[in-house]
Length: 130
Image 1 (cartoon, rainbow, N blue to C red):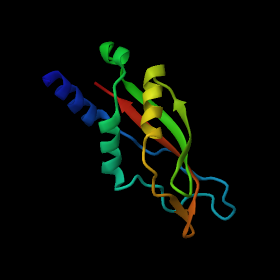
Image 2 (tube, rainbow, N blue to C red):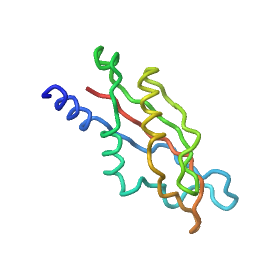
Image 3 (tube, rainbow, N blue to C red):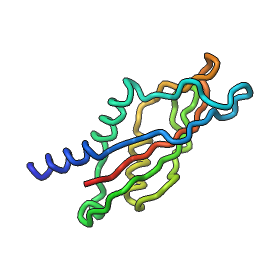
Image 4 (cartoon, rainbow, N blue to C red):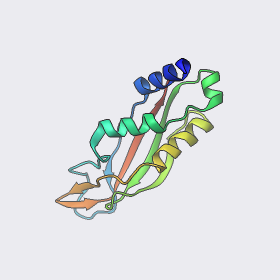
């Protein structure tokens, strides 16, 4: 139990995300989003979601493999997450875990431009650290 608690604590401290390039997609009047898409209840809730759903892959945990997976996705004007893919890989299993985490996220609050919801390409980094 203590080992599990320590592992969960270290994941909590080290799981990070950060938006990188966020651009409006297929909108005639807008080139850049004015209001970024947001996870329901904000950044802290996103971090909590990542921490509570992340399962460190066994091989990577045993071999103490750490690093960051960069996930690229589209957040639609309806807040749906689509076109989830790996922009920067760590390992096959960490990549699969990052994709699983993102695909299991609830709908986001969409980005806005000129008071209209818009599709936004979004990049999210998920850090694996023991």
